[in-house]
Image: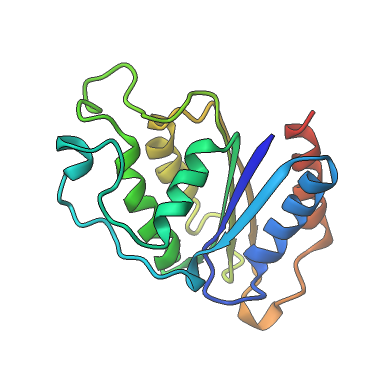
Length: 190
């Protein structure tokens, strides 16, 4: 089983990264082929809106560090997206990646019954952390992106979300959240 994790935090030892590492370590212990990309350490540009991926290519026309990430996701069985919530959304690094996934959609994606160029049946794990402790605040992030990512053929999407932890509380991720990541990895690798 191939698992690709994308860390969207600009901080090396962030809370979302800590949770993702718990998930990925468990997956690796279970024999998964697990690879992690730290988006902040890559050099890439956002979607150019050029529609080359719809007109004459079946992939993004840009050739940069994100090219390997997009290919890795294409070949993965499980994709883990880990991001802090900044200003009510995923980090800029994660948003830029998500924008580039537009290349996964076929030219007729709006009307097609099979709008994705990806193999069906992939599973998604979305990890979100936020400093604000209000669970109702920013609870639209996962459903909003989940709708788009469903177009790509993700058969199942799961959320690990924890609120009330921010930069001042690094390494203080609640044990219950780390355990949730372990249990989800074990469940998905059955």
